[in-house]
Length: 175
Image (cartoon, rainbow, N blue to C red):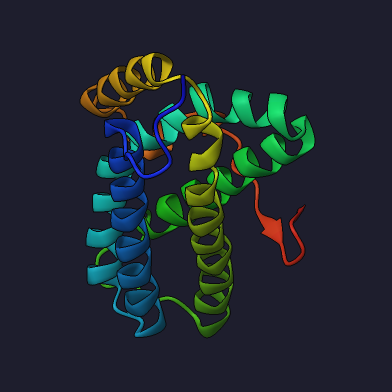
């Protein structure tokens, strides 16, 4: 049996909290990039890399297969690709050398990619309904998996197909 309509499960609370944290960090990163503050951007990108990995791993291993089953494999593939965009942004910013500044063109490209990732975080948060439709016992088991992924300490740049980051053009097409 699924949870009662107004009863929030531990999985729902944790998933929602993760997305709130991701949204805040992405907003801070966009401000640092827009202000061309490479030191701040690097610190925030590293924080995102360290703190988001477990959640991203959970989404890719647990949520997205459910999304493919309920909606479509194409939509799940788009969600995976949007993760690669975020990884590419984090990686690019982490690669900045001390004292290196971003060109206006690089900042605009990173900001466009950050908008894609922020949109992903917002839309992915609504996919919580896919998890909430599952029986409570199954949600409890998934909450345990989410906790294990978080505790695993993987960086975001170590999840999924991190070796080959993709970028998403406006409109959601891979570029």
